[in-house]
Amino acid sequence: MTFTARALHLHGHHARLIDETSPEAAAVAYVEDFAHDIPNSDAGGGGLAILVRDEDTGSEQCFRVDLETGETEACAGA
Image (cartoon, rainbow, N blue to C red; front, side, top):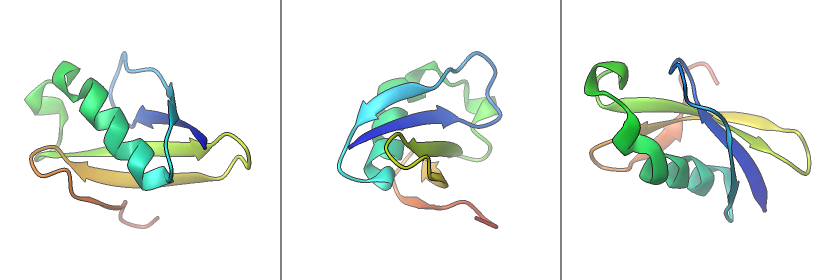
């Protein structure tokens, strides 16, 4: 499946097309590929909010990915 993923609230980070099996996997793949470009002060306590869009359905989901552990959960209020 193809997803578009982008970090919320980070300037200069554009959406990326990612082929993964699930939206959660796409969020983690985005962080694994691009977290090294994120200053610690922008990560908001070690977690990063990633907006993932399913390119087939247009459905969007937000996930918070812990930069230290890779643990993923739905964003608060999502």
